[in-house]
Amino acid sequence: MVQTEKIAAVLHTLLAFGALWILISCFWRSHRLDALRDRLFDLRHELFAMAERKEIAFEHPAYSMLRVQFNRMLARAHRITGLMLLVRAPQRIENPRQRWLESLTTLPAETQQKLMNIEERMGVAVVWHLIVGSPITILILLYQIIEMFLKRKGNPPEQTHRLIADEVARSMEALDRIPEDEHAMAAG
Image 1 (spheres, rainbow, N blue to C red):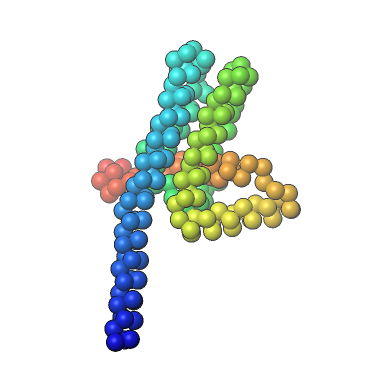
Image 2 (image 1 turned 135 degrees about the horizontal axis):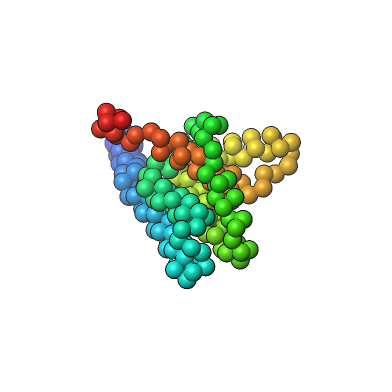
C-alpha cells in the first residue's frame, strides 16, 4: 500500500510539473510577448501624438529614427530573448542610439527630454521583458552586471537597464541582417 502511494505521489508531481511546463511554454510566453508589444505600441502612439501636436516634425531624423526603432522592436519582439545577451553583436555594428542622440541636438530641450523619456521607457519595457523571460536570463544579466562592475573597477554602471537596452538594440541591428527563414536565404 505504501509503495502505491509513493508511485501515485510521483505521478501526481510529474503531472503537475508537466501542466506547469505547458502553462509556461504555451501561455506565459505569448502573454509576455503580447504585453511587450502592447507597451511598445502605446509608446509609439505617444511619439506619433507628439508629432501630431507639432512638437516635432514627422520628417525630423530624431522622430524617424525612434519610430524605426519602435517598428524594429515590434517586428522582432518574438526574437528578443535572454540568449541575445549571450551572443554579442560584432563591434563593427554600431549602436543606432548614437545617431539618434546626435539628431536630438537640433531640437528644443523640452522636446529632447520628452523623446528621451519615451526612448527610455522603451528600453525599460524590453529589459523587463527579458528579466521576466526566464531564470536563465536573470543569471545572464547578473553575470553581465557583475562583469560591468568589475570592468569599471568597482564603480557601479550608470543606468544598467540602458546598457542592456543598448546591447539589445545592437543585437537587433545584427539580427536584421540575418534572414528569418530559408526562403529569404535562398532569395538573398
